[in-house]
Image 1 (spheres, rainbow, N blue to C red):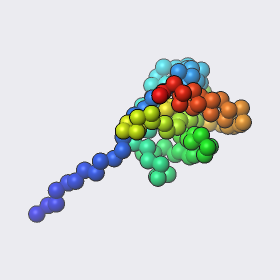
Image 2: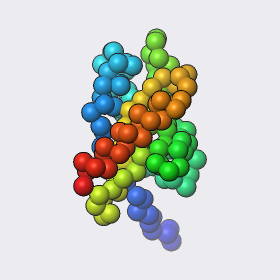
Image 3: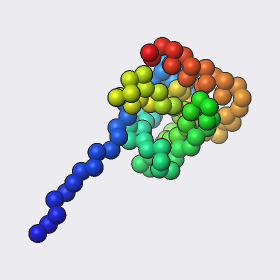
Length: 132
């Protein structure tokens, strides 16, 4: 007799995107079809597991420990931008609803310097202040 299939409940994150992230993506990706592809790829974040090195088929890594910034690299089929670095972090004002906040993005070949760290850390601080 076959064993019954058991479904293990995986954590599903709620995704929120900041207004500056929309502006970042509009600036980086002027074509609507490419932004739509990015949006489809970012929905994979709903199944992000901090204990696993891959997010479905996307690589992610921790950027800054004190603020908890994380980056994921998304490959796109665009003539101008081949891949985008998207920064997000975990913050849940309600502990029963785990939430990931997409803070913005930049070209993957750009360096994530101290100015960019300050910008994304500032965005995360604003999210924490306004989300409560």
